[in-house]
View 1 (cartoon, rainbow, N blue to C red):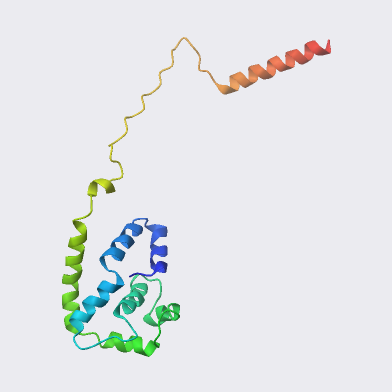
View 2: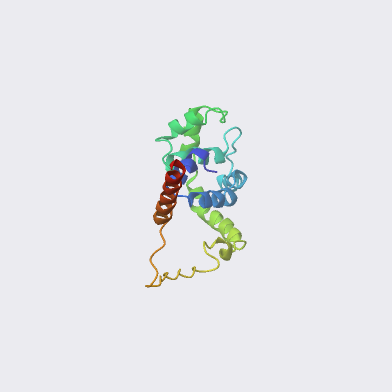
Length: 167
C-alpha cells in the first residue's frame, strides 16, 4: 500500500517502521482497498485508475516523501496509465459515505490479523535480564598482572641476550 520511498525514509530514524510496513501490507493490500472502495462507491467504477493507486499516491504525501499529490504522481508516472487530471478528478469525486465506512472495514481486517499474532514472539528479551557480572576481587598480597609489565620484561630479556651475544 505505501511506497518503498516512504519506508526508506522512516527506517533511517525509526526501525519499528518495518513492523508497521508489514502490518500495513498485510492489513491493507491493494486488492482489499479496491474491494472496499467498490462496495461503498456505488455505481462509480474505476476502469484505469484503481483506488489503491490513489492511496499509494497519497501515502507519499502523508509520509512526507513528496510535498504534493502532483509530485508523487510525477514519481509514479510510469506505473499510472492515466493523466494527472484523472487523478485529481478521482480525488474530487470520492463519496463522503466511503470515508465513514472505511475505518470500520479496516478495523475488522486488523482485528482478524491480531488473532494470529503471538506477542511472546515479538518480545526483545524472551529469557529475561542477564545476571550482573560479579566484580573481580584481586588478592592484596599479589600485584596486578598487567600486559605492559610482561612486554617490558620480554624486552629486557631480549636486550640481555643481545648483550651476551656481543661479548
